[in-house]
Structures are given as C-alpha cells and as structure tokens.
Image (cartoon, rainbow, N blue to C red; front, top):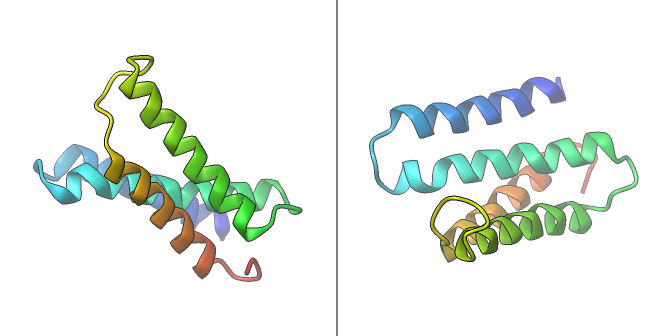
Length: 101
C-alpha cells in the first residue's frame, strides 16, 4: 500500500508539472508531492530513521538542489520558497504516515 501512495504522489507531481498552466500550483505543487514521496520512501527503506531525521534529509536534499541551481551546477532558478515547500511536503508526509510519529 505504501508504494501506491509513493507512486501516486510522484505521478501527481508529474501531472501538475505537465498539465497545469504556469502559476503557484505549477511552480510549487510538484515540489510538495515529490518531497512527500521522498519522506515516505526514506521511512520504508530505513526502518531506523526518526521522523526528524527523515524530514531533515528531504529538506537538506532540497536545499542542496536549490543551491546547485544558484551556482549553476543544475539547470533552473534558485527559489527560497521551493525549500520551504520541500520542508512542508516532508512534514506533511511524515505526519500522516501511520506508525512513524
């Protein structure tokens, strides 16, 4: 069941990115769903991770990606709000995941 939720989250992010016109939802929706799926994946793979370590891992990964964009290591535009959305997606995923609080 957990894999279905992860795949659904990833797929939802892709659909938003492809089909929703430019704007707030398109700019930040995929980041939220991908961070949500990432935290669920961490919790499935690592049975010893704590809730805070899972959230921090996703948030730090997002921060590093955004910094990579800022310093032109990755293609894209640095956006501080993206980092907040990564953290929000990770926190939401962590909070609603059964038996992982």
